[in-house]
Image (tube, rainbow, N blue to C red; front, side, top):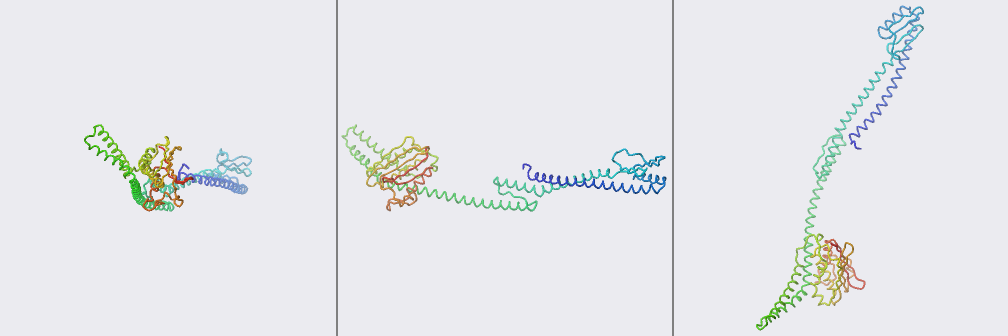
Length: 449
């Protein structure tokens, strides 16, 4: 198989010719030997008849003259006539054994000039030479025809296929060679044209898909940001109340500072308290603005964040509202489950949305449990409440857009869908179920950093 197509074809032809010419040569040699034997028998019989007639009917002198004439014509190699009184000879006796055929008749012995067996050997060698020459000529012609009509076109097709495999679809195969090879080349060129057309269509579709993906990404970002602004709106009442208390305290302290008889030490104390309340307001507003800003990382799977710090930020944003609704939040965070894969802004939006939903469900007060634990290379965050739970009618579609059981005006129906999308972007998953003892449970599984 390492010889290639041309080598295999030539080898096959050589084997076929070798077998064919061997059988032909063997048959020719056998027929030549058989003909030689028959010719020898025929000549012997003819000479015997001739000599019998010549010896019995002719005088001795005429017989010697006739034999001498045959010797001069190279028909006889030699002759010996024994009359009893004397032996007369014509020509020297042959010295090569087996090269002449002796014929005896009475006292006459003849040696034929050259036997048919001796002349057959050169003829056999000549025949074998012509057979071999014919075989070599046929092989050479077959080699030239195969190379011109088959091998070269196939090599051109192979080079074109390799060029196509390298990504260059403009390669063409010349239409030459045998009819089958030409049909193969034409099919290859048609395939290359079809591939170029499909590649152009594929590139156009990929471009359309990229544009669609970019539009979807932009729309998703708008939806996420819109849901974030909705969360900010739901937080506004508690934030306003939380800012109102330090503002009232600051106004009272400023009125006291207007008293000229106030001691210097007390003035300094009032100023320090005003500064502390101002920093408190700055911290609250800064956290809210940080959460509401639109610029988010594009690759949350490439980032890491502190899960405990994110939970603490969520609790600080909901502290006033949970306190006003008499909701206790029990937090248990494992020390080995702090660092997770994901963006802090995305994770903050997920946890804040889930906690807000729990707070809204516990309108008459209740308890929320937030726990984290490490399982192998995962961090599992579980959020539970003892509220009414999730209605069975929407439990299976709770993460689909616009699936909500809240009254109109109290929710967009996109919060949990956005949470699901954000968690998947971070390479995690989120699940929802109802607790056996009542209430809802959300389980967020993230990759440990």
